[in-house]
Length: 91
View (tube, helix red, strand yellow):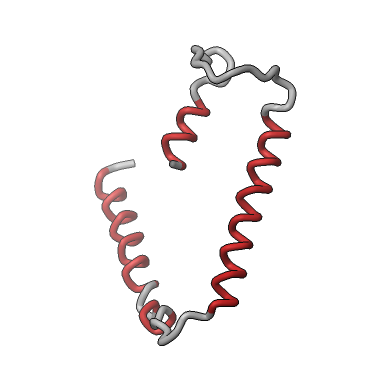
């Protein structure tokens, strides 16, 4: 891809992102008071989703491997460093 085409694509993407948020201020108007029941529902839902996700990932990914105490190993041949990539970019 030549440089001129790359600039055209970049300009198009930046142009769309600028205009796509024009009504964001109307949608995110601050409320005068805190709705306690909505807050509690949100906190309980997020905690449940995170907990169930961790349990599910544990049973799907690490159930077939033996458990041991915390240690560090060179897992380059087994996981191809992808777990470290995931930890870095999701932290």
